Each structure stands twice: as structure tokens, then as C-alpha cells.
Image (cartoon, rainbow, N blue to C red):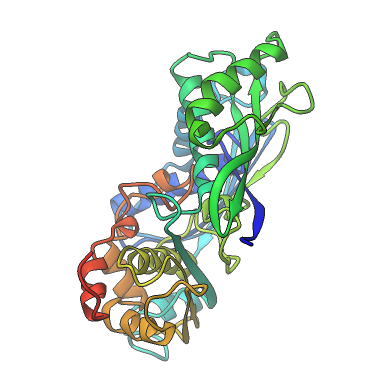
Length: 388
């Protein structure tokens, strides 16, 4: 009998305190890369009531007015109501930026350090994942959760639900049968709102205007809805919870399906393999699935600081492969550049593209180079499989 189970993933809106921080860090990174594509940065942001703190290390030929970037980002997210207790125009901004360590610099600059190729910006392990269960080759629970939080933001900004505030979360529990998604068991929405809005109106609008349009294909008479389960969500954003860069790494990736190496993405330039190798691992896994070499694929790569080539490459197809995993690893090594410089060049990562990644997931959305399946046909031919 096929195994039945429920898997749950969550997403958060762009106005969630942690996501504010991710967007600020990546907006600063984009401004640096616009002026100097070879900028190196590790930027951390903290937000709390009326205050933003930006810290970290930067090496660049450019100059960024960090306070101005912070305020612009907060305004675009939607914190423009003084009643919330966090406002783009009058929040305090503290900046504590230092230079990148010269010990790290000599490892990531080509021609310096022990090894002459551009080395990884840190040691660590990174994962990429793809599955055939959605058109985006992503797990269904995280894709639905992202679409729900994105719709909350859309309906707030276009005034369909004008009482909404920027902070919010979505959680989606999907029932699987035999490894395939069958139905949505539970949807949880936390939607911050103005002081004088009746909670029943919020619940009704969220169910009818947010949940049903996004999840309708998977809903049935047994699906449960929880909207603002405490009964109230007025105090929100940084005054409610302090936020930090890099604290939503599961939201950023696959919603808990697959593995995670622990490294966050936002605020890091692509010399840092926490980010760039994770993007490449997703690209490789997605092309493996798109090529028909597997229905599910997880790729692990691991690096040493200052060394170009990964120390290990592992492929797991969870028993769905059409060729052996050892053969797939050989194809990956032959057809994909996995050095930091190779990744940066192949995925065109020295561009100001990072603010756009910092909310609603780094994977499963169009417009990013690592989401292309342009290597699928080549992999299929190399594996000796017939054209799809």
C-alpha cells in the first residue's frame, strides 16, 4: 500500500523582519556591484523598533550611501505608516562596516595565496534540489507558501485589502500518497492588519482572496484554514520581532525538503560559495531532473577556503534515477563548472540581481540564470537517452 504522509513548508512576506534584513543586505550588495562588479561583501543587517544596524565587511572600488539604500528599501517594502512604529523616513540607521580580511582576500583573488586559481570564499557544504512534482521542479508545499505570501503583498499594495500591513507568514501542509502530492491538508496564514479591522473580515478576505485562488486545485472539504490563529495581528514588523539577515534559510531554499548546509545567502557576493555554489547546485539538480535522469535529485558539493575545486560531489536520486548515480556524478563533473570562477562566469553572477532574490525564495522563480534548463538536452544526449 502506498505510504501516506503530510509535509509542511512555510514562507514569509517581504515585510517580515528577517526578510527586511535580507533585502537591505542584498540592496547594498547590488549598489556595490553596480559600481564595481568585483566587490566583495559580507553584509549583515539587524532591525528592531525604530532602528536598523548594518555591519560586516566590504572590499570595493565603489561607494554606497548605505543609509539612503536602507531607507529606500524599507519604503519600497511598505513601512510608511508611523502607527506601526517602524518608518522608512525616521528610523535610526547605524553603520559598522570594516574591510574584508586580507587573509580571506588572498584566497579568493586569482594569482594570490597558496593556490593560483580563484579559491572558495569559505569552507562549507552546499546542496541543490529538484523534483518533478511542480512545473518549477520544486516541492509543492514551499511553492504554494511563496505564492500565498506574495499574493498577500500584492493585495496590500494594490489596495484590494488596504488594511493589511507588510508583515505576514504562510504555512502549507500537503498530503502525499506514494511520494506524490494529492491535496492540501492545512493552510495557515498570519496577516498583519490595522487597528480597527474586524478579525472576521480579515479571515474571510484571506480565505476567499488569498488562499482559494492559489490553492484551489488542491483544496477539498477536509482542508483546514487557520487565519491569525491568536485572533489579532496588529503589532507587527520590527517592533514585534527583531530581524536578522540569514535567519530564513529554509524559506529561501526548499521548505525543508532536501538538505541544507547551513549557510545563508543574502549580503554575500558570489565569491562566497554559500551563495554561488548553492545556486549552481540547484542549476545542476534542476537540469538533471529536466533531462529525465531522475524524478528527484539532490546534489551536494563541498569546498575548502582558498581552493578552487570542490573536495566532494554527491548525487542522490532517491531511487528515481534512470541511470546510476555514479554515472550522473561523472556527467556533472564533465559538463558543469564547479570552481568559484567557473560558477560566477557560467551563471553570470557579477550583476546587481540580488535584491530580487531576497524575498519569496531564491529558487523556483523565473528570471534567474540558475533556474534555466539549458543543459538538459546535452545531459540527456551524454547519458545516451532518447530525446523527450
